[in-house]
Image (cartoon, rainbow, N blue to C red; front, side, top):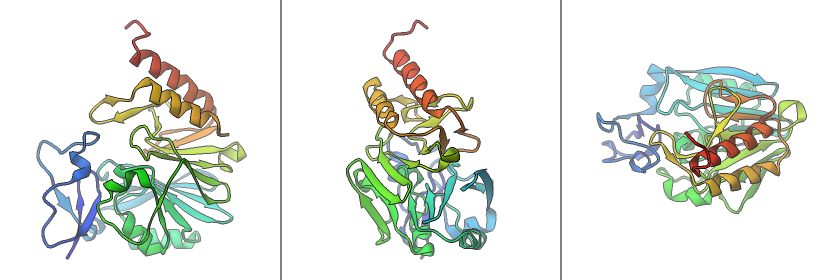
Length: 272
């Protein structure tokens, strides 16, 4: 029996003969069910219709993304370190070519995911590479396919490998997570943010939302808290969830500036 995949968010479900009656991720107020209705696919079907493309972002950092676009169309990031490689966030398509490329780069030491919208086929990835998939425990209720490879961490910080640390930032989801990569940006430090911190198209600002497609903002107090938590970290670059959504220098100042701008508008402190 197949493990059905939601075509809108690409989250995977336990095996069954028929597709699930609903996708709870899409029915949540942060996502949406398309007006045309829910549709389903499988990993085998995707392997016949899609491929993964790769892009080098900086030394030790690669992006992998499905082509043509799938679901939310996020990318995953492969961080290479002397202690092993980490896959940050997840995409739906795992095929033989992707396994061979990652195997040739040294395999994986672990997978970490920012929030439930990018859980996707995480169990397939964890099983294929024989590694744990790290999720924040505050989002445990959003897991649709339980598996022993899933590792739920708690509190505010989780070390993965030397130089790579997860931080719970909240905001978009209660367990919303970013990763701090100390060696990123030429040793100045980088954040891998998913869309917990949404890098905007100008490459100079960030956005903060409870729901991006449904345009539900976060309270200013929450954004100030998130910005303060990031301010305690050393970084000069931020890599977001989508193609060409990165700030390669000056990211710490951009985050502070963006949080101030957002809070001023949402609090009504700026005249339209």
